[in-house]
Image 1 (cartoon, rainbow, N blue to C red):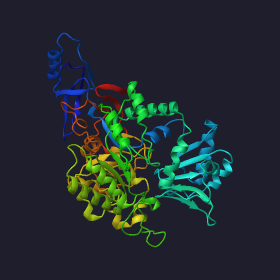
Image 2 (image 1 turned 60 degrees about the horizontal axis):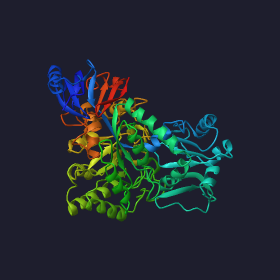
Image 3 (image 1 turned 180 degrees about the vertical axis):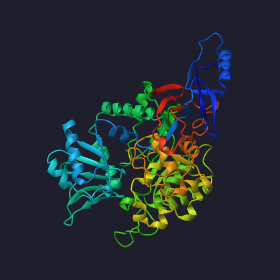
Image 4 (image 1 turned 90 degrees about the horizontal axis):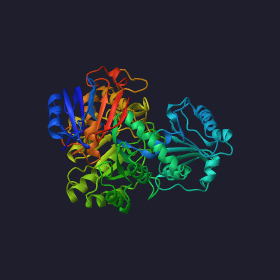
Length: 546
């Protein structure tokens, strides 16, 4: 062993509760030891002998923490939407969105026009758009706008024609096409139907354009202190789920993969693709870690599967619906459990959460716990039945949640579900009290991969942009900063099946480190978002420095 790098600071948070003066001695890509500065320098002299002295990085009183781990993002979409290939915006109205697309078209004069981020319930007026406004502005060029929640597409007539959609078209299972009263398509496509179309739209980009977008997104992750991610499938159709392992692998071969990537392709009856990836990617930077599936949609569109009808029901029995038949989901998860593979299921509504927990419970009873270190997860878990809150910890299921999602739709939970059900939405404090594991992420591109926004939202339960509501939404569910840091590091490592080597600064762990310019554990909440990342190390390698 030789010590290659020593990272020193008066403020080191290893993942416990305390901040202390310490030095982190790194050998290769792992932490060799942690202790007082002089002891670590003496260790280097002893182990290195006459070899080269280690690089000593003294960050004075900056806060050194484990590298952040985004437990749930969609790498392909995040990279494309963060690049010059597309644009992103919420918009103030349908007309405002069309005007923004016209400005974007000036920068991208040919090919598909692609955007992401619109949310009609945040507009004035809050009405669903149609193809007519896009047709007027773009009569001969295909335009596709993906909603901010990544569950709905808004297309113009040219796009519909290029995709082969007509008034006679039937949506795939789990999806739908909005129609005018006369049966004509409005241009709004939902859930599985939207996901099915995205590969054909994204196919307009070349592999080199996609690779460049991936490089840009990796740089953005490094600027935010993010050293690991879980790349979650966004299922288009069987066999195609936007997990571009080929791009990740090519970047890895060139030494350009600066964040660890954990692949979660779609769970299908045929597990061959996942098993091939699992055999191919066995190194510390790129691994196939488990499966992803979708059980429902989102509450704002009434596609989340809930037990009782929505408070503002659009029709009798308006409870949303499962995107995958419950019996089909059961068969898929049990088949994965038989092979010891973990599954992560998109569950937002209380009925979806309950059904998924029932399936995990049956799988555990039938096949026993998953092999050591592997964990099933529920993604988003926004709206619980009271008795299901404690079941996550009892079944060893990770709650993979995205703190900035809480305030994306101010007043929306109460509007859609009513005040009583809203009390059990994103119950972080309650979940931790039951012993459950929280794993933090962003669901990027649904929200940006801004690490300080994640920490701010979790600890204040306020919107990162508006800082509303005052005092925090459901303030009793706020958690402390140390708990938030652990969810964003150790919890996410557990979701990836790598808690044994990621998420803490301890001897033997991989040397993933973020250095912050202020102590977020002690600073005022309003100062958290002012915090800058000074440096990011992945496996001891400095991949970003301010």
